[in-house]
Image (cartoon, rainbow, N blue to C red; front, side, top):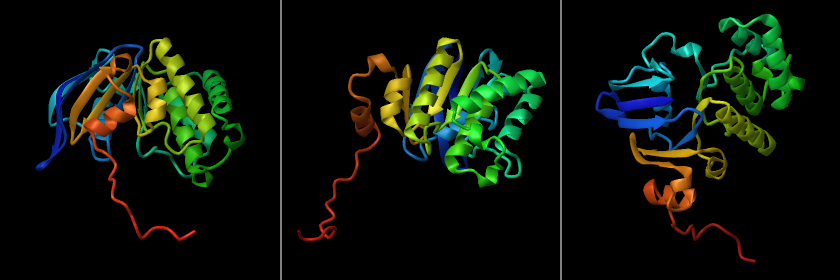
Length: 244
């Protein structure tokens, strides 16, 4: 379970996250939606212990977000991806296994499966600085999954990957939740959120404006987003176009 109560984070007069309270049950996929600057990534950093809140508290799977042991039980796909340019894709997974103290044979077994499932086998020996953005994203995701975490925190897992990979990730997350892993993700891709999430939280200006189970949403996710966050501008660019 992931919980936070009254969590806020301010930078001077700017409130990046303001009085956020939410709960994600064990084995649930929760999607946090909102525009750029809404506070989604900041909240994820707070809940994973990467950023201290200005006030409020939270816990993940029974550990306080300030507990140094938290990083041992969570898998994180950060906004920055946090990869090393001079290591290969495979070396990143080997390093992850070593950090978590996994037996070498088990690391190789899990890495082989993850690389195969994510279509990264061909890139195992490719240096990260030679990888496409999609390959980097998949490498960071594989690192988050490899230690078999109790909770997954994924910042935009579907961004920058091809449709087949996006569907593969969706299936992995659904299977993970069914096996007791709690998943918290951020995304801008509403069509995929509809198909992966059990619970939707919408944020705007650092505050939660919607917190509901997907099955209880009173309208389509797209319509709710436009109603609660913002509608696309309807101004006509009359100068754009050529006569037939």
